Amino acid sequence: MANAALQTGPGERERALAAALAGRSVVLVGMMGAGKSAVGKRLASRLGLEFRDADTEIETAAKKTIAEIFASDGEPFFRDKERRVIARLLHQEEPIVLATGGGAYMNEETRNAIREHSVSVWLKADFDVLMRRVRRKPTRPLLQTADPEATLRGLIEARYPVYANADVTVLSRDVAHDLVLDDVINALEVFLVQGS
Image (cartoon, rainbow, N blue to C red; front, side):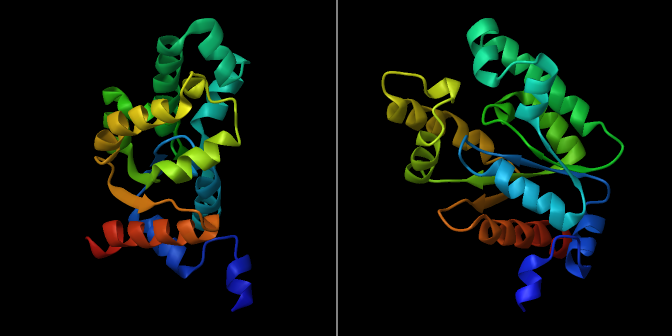
């Protein structure tokens, strides 16, 4: 049983799930600090797919950090670049697991591209969980305000009704990432395998 926890490649269950995706990617959406990158890397490994992080792709293309892009070019420029990068990643021949930035799913064009080419998973986290996590990373441009808690509450209020349009919702809580990963796999199975 201990070996099951060490498994990195796809087993029978994961191969069935990858087949049920029928060539579609899995896109993780949700707030900053929800665990999209950490869970996404593990999911990609389990499914035998490539993992990509939209923010990392944007930083590589721009040769700047997200914070530097926000500071030098502004949020509208960043959002346009984000939209184009996600569209490019979703139009690849091979399916991937893609972690998106917190604001990406708010763009209608991006939501439509995600709907058309992938299965979306909202990693939903409570305010307290998010605040604990984002405090550890002081580089979040949207939280560089006089009252980061109020800013985060405002973002949650604006974004959660939109995130609720994702195909699958999984609660991201303060447990090991592998437990959240198991929840994601279970939810995808329900949506793809049992739902068909």
